[in-house]
Length: 139
Image (cartoon, rainbow, N blue to C red; front, top):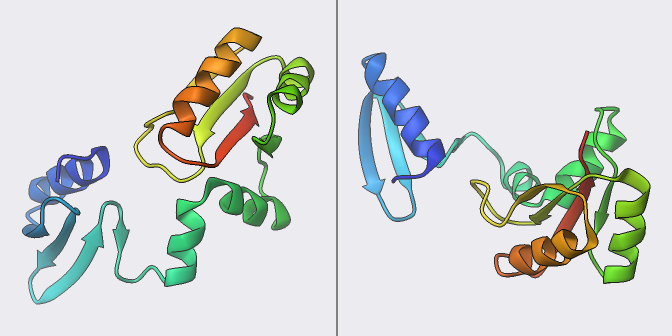
């Protein structure tokens, strides 16, 4: 249960007098209890989050497509397929974020990537966490 999400939520819950029941520390799944109200949580999501929303939240490319379609400001983004395309993207936007498409807690993320060498390293690192890698313009 020692993820950035669960730690933040459970510390604040304790501060507010909200009870916590750990169901599975490894997963991490827990229940927040206040009076006779209960809500199950997985990391920062509750059981009120539907399956489609959960899937979209886990896939950074899909979340980006959804947000863009509904008019939210999002950085330019490509799914990594080949280094030459990534280099063209770098030349256009000058500073990038490289991240695994489906990972939590900042694992495998590189920020302010400005050189081809750093881009290659960032892609290699992100690929260790997910077979799909996203490259975004750093705003």
